[in-house]
Length: 329
Ligand code: KDO
Image (cartoon, rainbow, N blue to C red; front, side):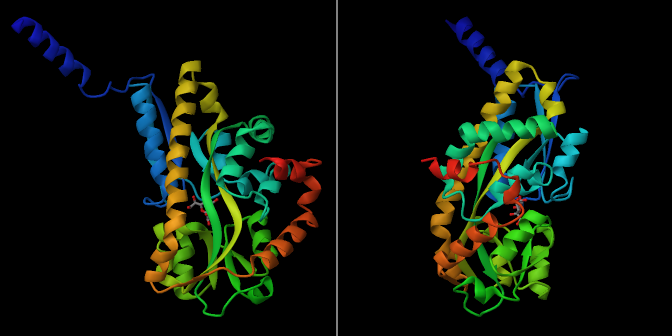
């Protein structure tokens, strides 16, 4: 029996030995994002890495680059298309620059909540729209993650009840036409600034405010340099965990399966934590001295929806898409 025990111990030691070493065949996956370390979509990349590297030992080496240190915000799709970057979390606004039909998902007050978002993108509509990205951009979308519901966050003290109250308010938006239009539709004067520069722009008063979901406002510490959060809930935002088609096409079928499964675990982790956080964060911001309140949301909804439907973006939306999205229960 003694010999058996020793053999069992040896087997155990082998199975818990250091992970398989990287070989020449190890696929390196470099991911770039502007996300800050403590935000859920940054943490979900670590979940992705851990899941994938343990599911297929030695086959992948996932390298995560946060804070836009590898590629500037918004340049990730082009980098993946050139084959200079393997993975990123891209926005509908990024995609809309190349595929105008995608601007439908940049419209305020269309997606209703995180559950609606998952159903839309994991159903027929998602298959159709992901197919366009695969065919026209050479980018493979793995899954949608819930980035959160965007709210106004201002350094000014004036109460905001309706879009008219935002007249002349310099509202930072990420830099693209689709994002800037959202700022205009809300009634503000949009200013394009990259995510990494928002804190300083708020601190120095270059802008009057910015919009992001509550968990991001906490993670990026925007509450330190602002006075109020107006719960407009104007965009139920998504982030699409994606891979360069060049990298994707080089994977075996079992590797593709492992990558897809790890991506779904990662977005599930992100969504769960972010939804829980959103339900609790109002009291955190109040304890930091911010005013947090709901404006006349119907006034915002009415104006934003009307402006999108009448916009030049809508001319590129596939026939009937708004009704189809609305019909997803
Ligand atoms: C932002 O710049 O406000 C934004 O929320 C836009 C998103 O599409 C995404 O790029 C996000 O920033 C970054 O991941 C940082 O959280």
